[in-house]
Length: 119
Image (spheres, rainbow, N blue to C red):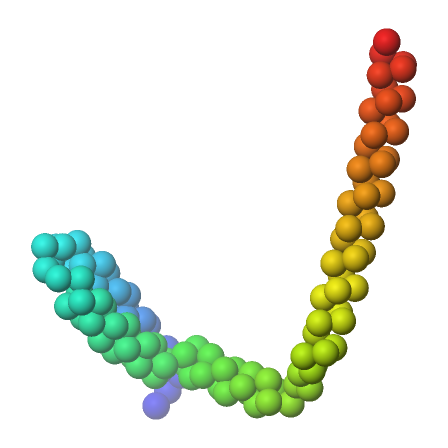
């Protein structure tokens, strides 16, 4: 299939996906008197269908490839232990308090100097 035909098909798929989203928004407001459970289930079904149609496009396929690659990279991450996380949190907490005290003191001194200058 030629690149122009594939591009036209992709455009058509995006139009269908947008039409489904618009239909879901309209349907949700039109059927506002129906129980919320039915409306949520209908919106979830539309979202799945829309996602499937979007995944059939070139950009959608590239996005799925990116997500799969991201999941592989996340598995390679070495996560900190509970002890390391607690220690790092405490260090940040202490530095925030120290910085707050320094800024409070600086504000007090500058306020005092401004009151001396302005009378």
